[in-house]
Length: 392
Image 1: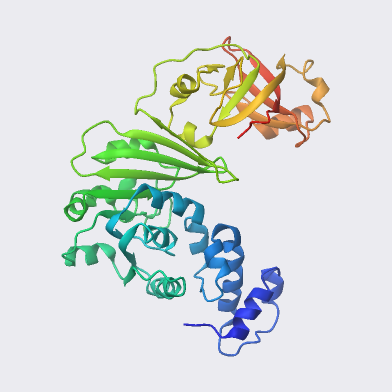
Image 2: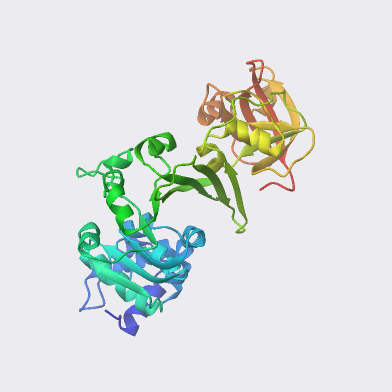
């Protein structure tokens, strides 16, 4: 499966080219399909920032661009690997193998199972050129393999596909493939610990209703965008699970906080004070809106606004702003924003950002931030701010 040096050079020399223009040219390699070469170029383009280890190794072979889009980034794979360790792990939905590459640094043996034969062969080749010698690749149905095997594992890792047989997206774990809800009892026969990765669109309360023995749920954000939910299952665990919010920033700083399952019943409300805070999206995903206020000693603007405020600047898990001005939302009072640049955010407000821009002729950009929201008196207001130097 090793590529000839002239083909590797061609791929690297064309990484900056537009793939559509390149497709119109003649294939200079008689022994390789042009569509396959173009896929290598396009997939490697997508991997440059997401998978720098794979991108920088000229001997790596890439699968379809869809596989690259769906795989974990190296940043997220590294984080996941730090959560668990042991002797043996089996990945029942191996994919491109990025997670397993990093799990292999924490386990003595990793078994990578992949149903697609072609993808399994590519991954096996890549593990070899990446010197990941403690990973065994298995091509075929992972559940059948596990049922036929007598081996037990310290951890089972699974990333169920969120599409049904008709390729439509599903929103319950029991509708994903493999069906971990149905398989949970069997999986616990082979391991005391299960780590499940699911898409952030899945609802946390539904997950808790569907699964038993949930020890923790992680909401993982990358650059303030929720990328993954991780579900930790432990055999015979009967206590309340923890909710853990994580955000990994552009500079690699990790913000992580643990919250109880049930959000506090209430929190202190106030009008906007000197500083305004917008929580990381991963913190909002786990629904601990009131606990956020308690943990960071800040007040909420409104029960449903999920914006926070304080007189003194606090070390907050999210974006921090210095409030410049608070104005009522009406055409007269915000007329001065017409034809100016402003970054707009809406929270608990009837209009969407684009509707506000169009209605009030506000351009995007600049260093002014406008939060269109509702205060504790149910009045619609606009809070004008600038980022603080300590903003995350």
